[in-house]
Length: 328
Image (tube, rainbow, N blue to C red; front, side, top):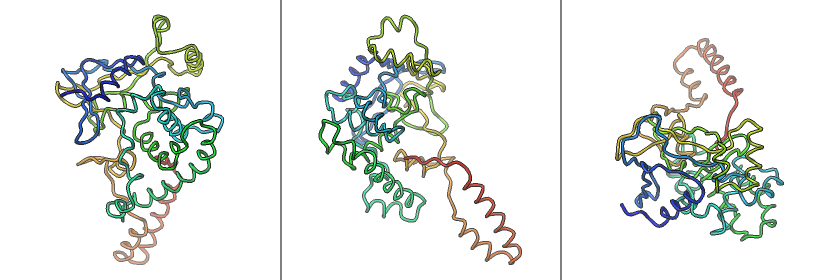
């Protein structure tokens, strides 16, 4: 298959930024799905090293060109990273990650950016219906409160930081970003985010590698400022050098090489990544407590109903007291 121009540019970008991709891997651009997949060109075995990615090549708040403004505004996590993505995209060819953005979609097709008609047709009556509406409300408030005041300080096209572009950046961050370490935090990891997900059947895992003296002497990627940052990172107990992708399950020649995004049901996969899996073993159905109580009322005596309702109320209270994590 002929390599597309964006993929050729991305391969050059990886070489110039110290990203090492094994010759045993092939990046395939599928026009029908408008996505890139990773395939093996030969048999891969447990323990094989297939990629090394310097942390300095990852797009994070600390590595982006707008670091000072983002940190001065007190933005962190996915919110700060979304601003970093918008800023670097607005720089165009001047951005260190311009050719990396070339292999990413403008936005991921997650429900957050679906049209109202699509939401009404496809999600009405599901648990995601209310969640997506809340996401849009909260994110619009975040943009108004945290990002709009920053736009004037950026010497770039204000439209690049619009609410719509913020939503687009958030879809990339939510579906592709990784927690790198305590120092670099949350970031976009080029190459690593091209591996598709497969529940319970992933082939690769991440790990960190130490930086040796030879790396210090021969690394053309890190400048002096980045070396200082790496020293600070080391002092915090995080590995400063790079991320490695290691084969943890054999892959046959010609087969797709998968990562895993975690063990989650289809609602969570659709919410965060924009796809579902057939026969997902982690799929669940949430049933509202009022429906269960109504069923109990129709099936049991008043005394039995009170006992069961009390037990369910305690269960609900226990669930409400557990820590919750919003995806966006």
